[in-house]
Image 1 (tube, rainbow, N blue to C red):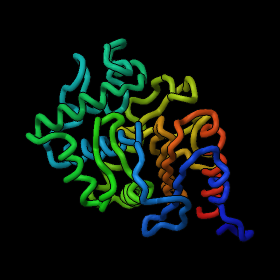
Image 2 (image 1 turned 135 degrees about the vertical axis):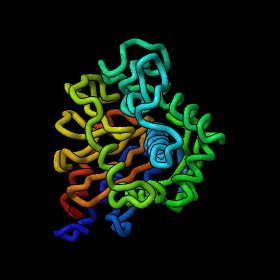
Image 3 (image 1 turned 45 degrees about the vertical axis):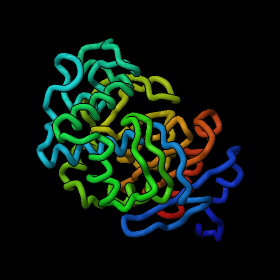
Length: 272
């Protein structure tokens, strides 16, 4: 509850959606929630956070390396994670690696293929064993590594706690992944237009100074996470010590671009 006795998540019930589950967590515990937190819904591009976690675990296990060649000529695992490989959304190479920030589902498909080949098991199995099971994310199932997971807000909150105080990743790996990879690259943030620069970490979209953005003005520049076309998001704000997760059954659109920053500001104001 907020300082004035008002529920900072109350506005969620007025969102123009059929189902919405939103929760807030500290590194230790869930602080608030509304809606069916255990109901599994498509995560769309929030899946990329799970894929990034799987790849980063594989890096720590030395199954793959960030500098290993992957994707088009001159591209590496790090380029693919940071949407800097030059691959277009669905696959064709349209730029040299490291020149532009081009949001690419195809790049994450390649990441899944690379880890699967090196680990000798399907990528979904790898992520389940390396990420979902250790974090207790029993309500989440992997699919296509760019967009195919189905999961619930409660599980995303568990991932948020990991990203606030890492256990399956080392703090050093998380720090590297949540800071800018290949600085200075311009590009389009889906749903919010061209950003200069369009900063991204290793799988994590970075708030930095982006405007407009799907998080709030009260979120610190260090905030990172991802949102999905299915009306889902997870942001992690290390400065506030908070993570906020959302799943809905309505696709992202103007309603979300308006509602999510307002919600994010209420969360940071009341819990940060």
